[in-house]
Image 1 (spheres, rainbow, N blue to C red):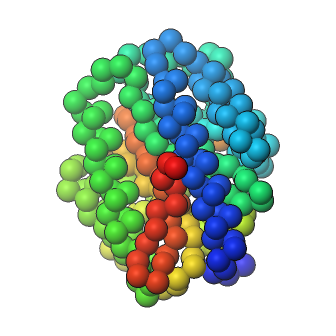
Image 2 (cartoon, one colour):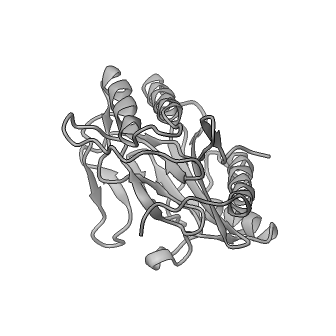
Image 3 (cartoon, rainbow, N blue to C red):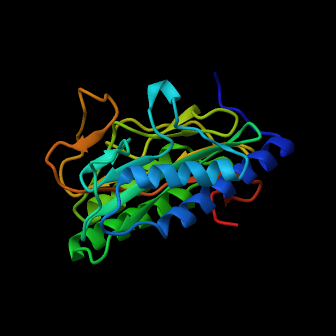
Length: 254
């Protein structure tokens, strides 16, 4: 399927779902503290989303067993909440929320710190957040999608970090995952010259690693992706709309 250019009614529906996803992150961020389990976070997210007449999109998506992804420290993405994983002082955690509201999808994630974290972790989070901002700054009608990965990769490398290239951003809104795939990585050779158009909606969600860019997917649960070298990873995500004059970040809290 080609890239879906959304109409005004669809954009408004997606905007509302994105706002709910963003509000969910604000809500759950207040619950992140030492001693709680990732399953506790999952149950709270599920309750909040359903309480706002929406559905948590990850639940049962291709067999994913929970309502939210919780990726802790060296987990790059798709961490599965459970009763055994207890947050401790110094942890960093990505919480990835996707909502379905009136049939429309909103997708966003944020990083949270548990108590006092190390200077190295704080630097990783700041650089990753800056990578997201730089990626978003490339979005405007007529721009090539490849510019997103170039901007992110250059900034990450400037600080000695690597960019995960096994996972990518994606179109969204009418379905969980749509075209196009948004690469956050540029290897100096492959460049996506497909052009952005007003009305396109997609996620930008760079995953930045302290060490090697490679991730290993758990052979048992087939979801959890961790860094190959065990070093920490961070990710921030927004859903964005290409407007006539530039970009609108849809996943901002209401």
